[in-house]
Image (tube, rainbow, N blue to C red; front, side):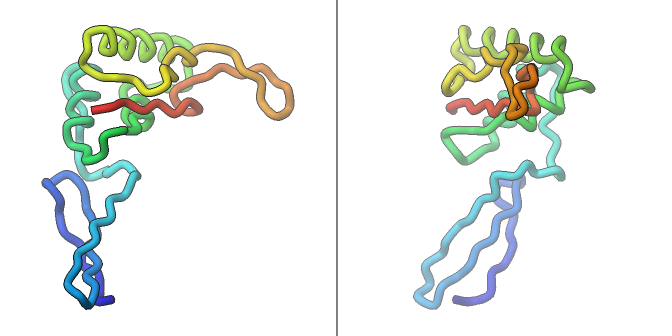
Length: 130
């Protein structure tokens, strides 16, 4: 296999293209957020839609985008706001939430030590479909 080179894909994310000896090209896309690109728009809805429009996957993890929308992503108030925004967008058909995990936001669960905790955007994985 030849040496991999980095290129820009759609000006939104860096990908590595390792070239094999038989000239087949394999594209590897990282699931980590690209910190060099800003998706932040005027409203949370616009930010979510802008981020989703730049992703190549059909199932998109939006947890890190949601956590960047408000200064305190662990708070109950933030969880309630994000839950309402996602439910509105889902009902309007702008996004399709996989597994309805947004309903968990703000709800109580028990950790390994049997301590009551609240689901928030930092401990609840949320995916949407394009």
